[in-house]
Amino acid sequence: MDLTVEMFKPEIVDALKLYEKHVVCIDKTPDECQESMVRLMEKAIKAYLNRGPHLRHGIALDRQLTIILSQTDCARPLCGIYFNLHSPYQKKQAHKKTDVKSQRSEEN
Image (cartoon, rainbow, N blue to C red; front, side, top):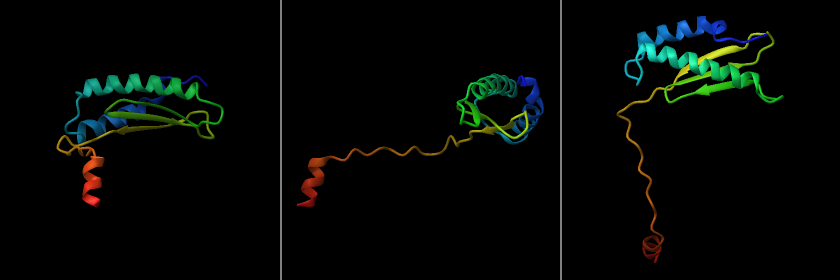
């Protein structure tokens, strides 16, 4: 079976509806999001078709979206479209460098 982006049009349409309804702030307009979905779907299809013999998925992602095609018992794979959401207010944890000399002096 030849896989095309058109085969997954219902999933893309549903994801775009949810995007416009629920996603408040992401770095893409709805049109840019649709373009990204189509581009990522093409990459996921390519990854799915070229997967190894014991692998079941084709995955494509960018900073905001992940598309996964999963092998099933049917000819058409399952399609999952996920929004990789994060808060711009989330604090990044600073990596503390431990000074070995000061740590040793504290132990003594």
